[in-house]
Amino acid sequence: MPSVLVAMSGGVDSSVAACLLLEQGFEVVGSHLKLVHTGGVEHGCCGPGAQADARAVAEHAGFPFEVVDLSAEFEERVVAEYVEDHQAGRTPNPCVRCNERIKFGAFLDRADEIGFDLVATGHYVRTDLGRDGRWRLRRGLDPSKDQSYVLAGLTQRALARSRFPVGGQTKAQTRAHAERLGLPVAGKPDSQDLCFAPAADPTAFLEARAPHLVREGEVVDAAGRVLATHGGTHRFTVGQRRGLGVSTGSRTYVLEVDPRANRVVVGSGDLLARRGLVAERMNWVAGRPAGPFEAEVKIRYRARDVPAVVEPLGEDEVRVEFRSQQPAVTPGQAVVVYVGDDVVGGGTISGAVR
Image 1 (cartoon, rainbow, N blue to C red):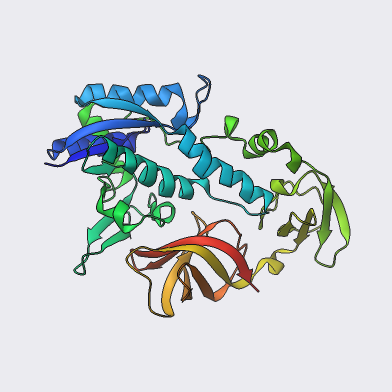
Image 2 (image 1 turned 120 degrees about the horizontal axis):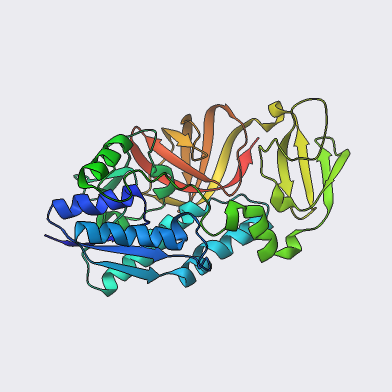
């Protein structure tokens, strides 16, 4: 059987993924990725407790375990861009970049370095090999846990070398499997913290990392009238309603973030509606479509699918026209294109179409 290097966060999903592969006869080695140095402070998937949990599972199941320091790669390929995006007025999704560049980039390089055939994670997605010899990425079987949105940047190289053992089952089945095996993490809750932001406070992280972002500017309405002042555009994202520092007598949302003018534009919810978007850095999972096509798109991780017409522009750009207007199209977030359960591609929103 092939050898597989399993990325183990210390949570139940990756732990069960490793054990399922072991039961299937694979040569398994668990690998805990150290992405940030927390100074011994417990924090989500990156603290000492997470590492200890991953090691305990490997010892319980009886397969080798290692800790790999990828913090330099994570800093260069994920964190630095996260800061740059906020400086440019965008709202990035660092999990998308981490999966693309670290868990299925640098980690795959690690597998090559030590001579392993495959890598595996506990993501809830499915893959299959098409008749044309190209790999497909599909939604996870459990719609409440599907993680295809954050994996839409995976290339054919990554898909061919990756396995997702829990993608074809529900979260309840995963926990039941962990309990059956007596894994020490069977009842461990999911972690949703931003792993590199202490106390899960991204604003504090940004201000410590880039103090020049803290500068007073204007909060204005759609007509340009000054309503209040703010302490930095990095504190705002399109569609935000709370913490605006204004009182208009009705619900008010962020309509636009303009770091060049150091200005935040706010207004009523109806002004958020957009008829489409343009995106860049598009990854077409199984090949670039020849022309416009009908699809469903997701513009935020927890958003519902939206029917749309998708038109490829050049090699890595796309234009999306929604069948009905959508609120809060946010530059920096990922847009993922689906046809049924298949992920056609994913990219980064660069702008909205009014």
